[in-house]
Image (cartoon, rainbow, N blue to C red; front, side):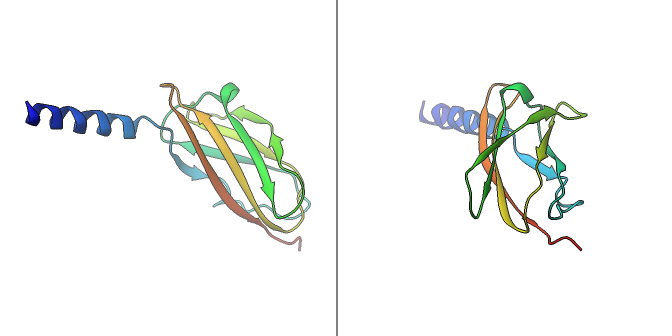
Length: 117
C-alpha cells in the first residue's frame, strides 16, 4: 500500500509540474528596448495561454506600476505586450498568465532599457 501511495504522489507531482505555463523565450533577448521607443514584446510559453485572462504589469525603479495591454501572439503559446516609451533604466514585467489547461503562473521578467544613441 505504501509503495502504491508513493507512486501516486510521484505521478501527481510530475503531471502537476508540467502543466504550468513556463516562459521559454522573450523577444527582449533579440531586440532590446531603446529609450523613448514604444516596443511590442513577445512572450513565448511552453504551452498555450489565454491572452484575455492574462495580466502584465510594468514596474520601474520609480513611478507607479502600470498594467499593459496584452494581446494574443501569432501562436497559441504567445502573448504580445505593448511596452510604452520608457526612460533608460531597469524595469520588470510582472506577468500572471492562465494556461490553456487552467493553471495560473505568475513570475517576473527583468530587463534594461538602453539609452538612445
